[in-house]
Image 1: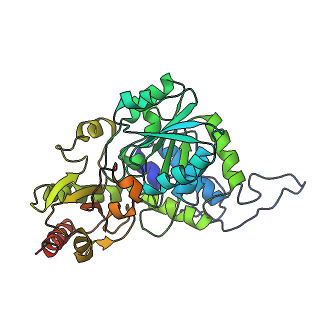
Image 2 (image 1 turned 45 degrees about the horizontal axis):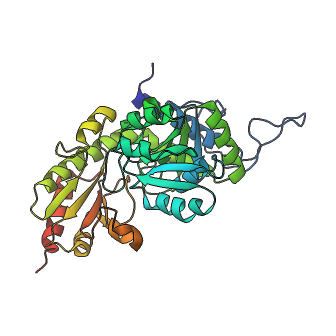
Image 3 (image 1 turned 30 degrees about the vertical axis):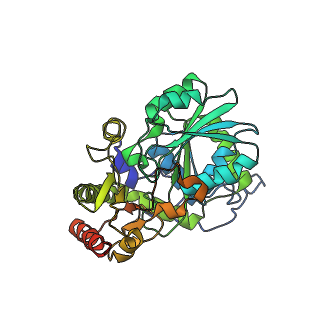
Length: 379
């Protein structure tokens, strides 16, 4: 059987190219010819399907061991389409610490258009079960939450959901199928912001969804075509190219993150490090059971004597920017992205910094953070 790293490089072939290209061709076409008898062919109009997009969709479905994959114009577009398969009046249990774009979509759009949501700490199975209502349809969470990296059990939540005839939806952006395959643990739908580790180079916006069941695949395929928030052929090609190097990039980024986390965990100017790769982290044991790596993202809480804004503006290797999973290292201040009404219960403070680790030399990253901490000390 083909192993995972080989699947990253050699995706499922479509047999569309007649020139013998090794790299899957980019089909930059909005339409395709009908058959001579006037019948529609497999591809006709690019919103409904495109060979370059289909290659990527088959590729991610194969990597996640799913029934079918779907490529969208952004991670938020992917989430929008997934939530759109549920009828008006549906209730969802969601993680209480979600990506800000997901939270905005849920609370400022879908909650005003017929869907209801209850946020819980998905590490607490009793709290998850207590939130179930007769109209509950699904549980939606991130395995490692954003930005404090709380670790939830996909296996336990999926089992609970099945016992109550609910659908489990997992955002696998931080881990990717290299470190976790939620469908293998019982989830029904897995989604990614492919802008991050899957694309991996900070040069595109993309979202991917994989379903475990044909009935869900049919609904998603209909809505992908109907809503039309599809990923362009060029960006599909770039995501596929990024996937080919996923393992080698994540190996390096995770090794860098581990070294940085261990350094910061001992630094007097850092009061806490949030990283499930540290044995002291509350989620470490669960992460060891259900994932094969902690990935390249960590968060820290600066000591009170450190000015957070001066810290992120004093780094020279790290850029002060809002993303993660790219080849370069980034820092951001998540507190300032939160609406004021959500700050009190978020667990965040102005001292929290999200640190996304890239491919740079490990020592350069450590030295850069050390000098930035020294520069940001309040006098």
